[in-house]
Image (cartoon, rainbow, N blue to C red):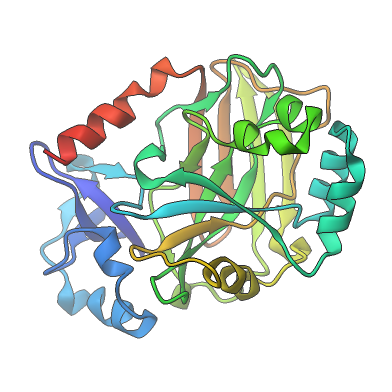
Length: 298
């Protein structure tokens, strides 16, 4: 099962549970934020089969990014050895990445507010002033307002290697831009994932009819513990509608590779799901996000 946010034609978004090719609304709850107001035990009870409405065929609904309200997406950086090497390779300030990899304090940074997130089938963006952008496939941890891990999804933390490489202080510009954050459209509950530190992550990039890059890693290679990352994130912050933390990437293409318009980026994480998006350039292709948010809040 996956926790989802879905929309029927002409109706506001709802929270539901996807099982197979159907979605069932959660009775008495309309937003993902409301689910993330619950403790882990309460969430499991609230999404049990006897708490769900009538199933609806997937073909009749639109699945949205599984985050709403005041939810946020954050990221952890340099949590895999491959990421450390790639950051050092691209940067004029190599030592900062070498040090943070083994430091007690992890690198954490905000990526997107809920309304800026794209999902399955929607475009992902690359900056028009970068020239060297890559996808970063990551296991994303979903935490409720109490800092409990309640589920997992997939994040594509699209990044500009050229901007971050020029100066680490440019990380916000390298990481936060239109279409730069994509989430899979479902959250796999924590109680259905046997071992989140033993998941396979696959990345494939197609350009026309050609597969131009593939990569594979495992969350076994993640140097940080998931709950430790959440604890550090929550220590100085409140997240009243929950938070999704992308835990870093272990797949980074070589320096001679960069995303181009119309590339198709496909990510799969075992037990969690898949995420596929097509690359668009610049700000204009993502105007629908602001328009959609205004419509939902009228």
